[in-house]
Image 1 (spheres, rainbow, N blue to C red):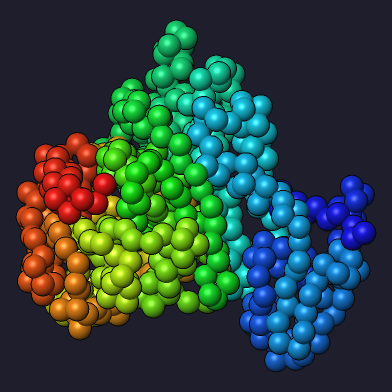
Image 2: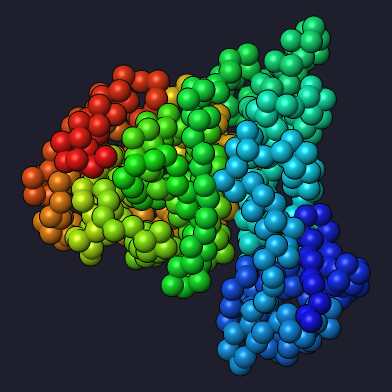
Length: 524
């Protein structure tokens, strides 16, 4: 029998075989390579591994061979599979503690997960991923490590949020985890609100006031002013708790794992991914939560995280329109969906359009919100292109830092009329959802999108909705979509927001139009 391997990446890297701790190689790069292979769980070209870990003029392939020999000794020779071109680590499901934590949280709300299991998940995920394995001189490794740590932080946040919401949680749970969360992230709204409300409820008013003052100072220093009201509970309508979201994973043709979720009952309605997604955080969010609840109320809503963000693989070779369409194909094929409407938002509209033209037999209708056919390098004015380039530079410099001002650029253009709560949540959400490098790559890919030549080939009923004063995508771009797609219906929404929020009148109009469109074409 092969030895049972268990790899811990939460905290310092550790390895056990058949329950016995194994000494790891002293080489930092060898340990980093072991962690990279274990977490990525797919084949890697030797050239790519050399580029990440040994970008030196001497003998990188020799260094790679030496490190692989040390990893084989530590893990057992069968754990590492390699040929002359590629290297992969073959592990049993659940061998890595971060993957076990992810699986334990997948598809379970606080009502379905035992309180002790939630406490254990929060405890495990509170440790930094691969503590002590930073290599600032290796940019590619450090960027990947930043992304993995952000994924761990997002999972920790999801687990801690569920702990706050669990019907059996204790005041001690809230105090412990809220204080720990705020110590790591002093402008996080969710734990600050939970802590302030608990302190006031238990009569500790002066301490609640002190937490409020500290949060206000941290928020203002991070550019998050005015401060969200910590006494206002933004928990979505209780009806959303009645839904049970299930999460699974599909593998794209290039090996990238794509996370998808299904929620609700009825005929399927597939949402194309957009900037940015996280299946766990989206569903609970004040930004999209109410919209997703409405869409899932009479259909089975299928969503997925685009490659490079959310619960999908972050370390991917390609981020492009072609890859976005392949990922949609991957999810649909994995779920064996036969015929369904597609709803797209922002650049997800272009993905839905291209998919509908490629697969007319499977798409029954298109619903396009705030979309465009040509990216910013093609359709924007020279001034707008210059601004986009500048924002991309700022993204690379500051996306992953604690200073929210870098991400606030996006929040304000996506939701100029959003509440302070909306903007603060979206600032934090973006940081947790993808890495700085991927945020840059997404923006770069969006600039090259061009499906104008496909619009006349769309042969399904189409509804196009666009905010009149959209600050991100101009109204005329949405109008061009409707004019170029045969028979498309166009609806103007009275809003300045690119993301239509559940508390604005335009949201009610949008949901009414979508409901009418789906009923008219018997899509429920």
